[in-house]
Length: 442
Image (cartoon, rainbow, N blue to C red; front, side, top):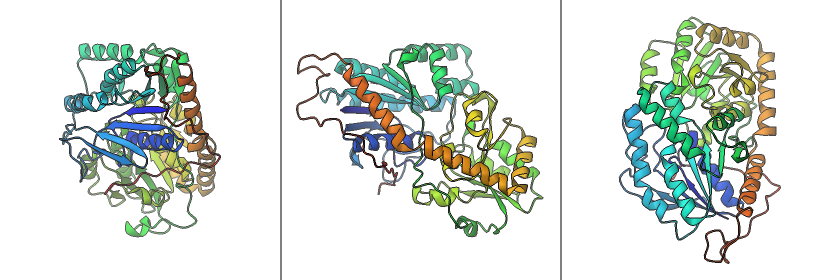
């Protein structure tokens, strides 16, 4: 099957949408599909084009069996609401030639990843011209989040953006998202339930697993053997609400048996470091390479997942999968009725978003109860193994893609819907797990 994936972010980005898009493309290629990707050079979460790549010229490369067309884009040093829009628009415009170059290839499925929805018009146009099936996969509801977070404040512009979003979403053959609540939000925007598909993020539980020893990061960060570590690892941006965690650390600064570790990069990191500069119980780490991710996640005695209450159903934090797989207790900030609340409530502690008092109480409770920490960790690990394993997720995806293409009406050999004579047949899903890795490109 010929699959064209159109997404802003891609490997070697180690976190967020780029990580999952790359792993999905690689898994589909491993299943025997012919996969091509139009994407940008890596820049996230540092908001800086990675060394060895250019933001001003495109390039072609092959990465782990997937052909990539990297299109240029503008990356602002300090992203704001308007700058983010210009940033996304620059990629949407600059990537058009790369998308057009695949017209003669005639893909059978064109899948675009949101963010950014600005790519959706080109994806729809290419699918219509070639007769391909169109697929929109939503990692974030970016328009809703932008206004709820105050990144965009013009009410008229907001209504217009939401109207365009609804119009675009309703025209895709399939609209998928990473949680059932997000699928429900898509339905509220007018997407027919029959067109929706639940495609959760996944975690390789053979790569993320509990260690039978203390993490080497303890020594590197000068953290005592018996000191409890509260770990946040991920993007440091507006959606995360990390100021709540910083305030909690300040309030617990007199607890010599508790250390807070912030690992990652992002737009708000410098501000967070300034805020915590005088706190003896806080450590900072830069985003770690994939080969050290398991070591990092095992640093935690408990993971903490702060989140602003106004984005509770707009995003499902992808970092939760690794937290569960590491078999460490999780504290999440979420409202009852949200999918994050439902996912964590029987496998960890859930507290009200942006509530420092409740977060501090939850940390103190878990510090005092090692058996409860172990039980929560075991429940999270079991959930990751049973529900979030790549084999299960990609088997369902492969079946859906096959069903989607097989429902297309057949036409003459020149039509886009006819499989080329030299095309590889669908590969049978292996009984063995697909092991995924995202590595840096030299």
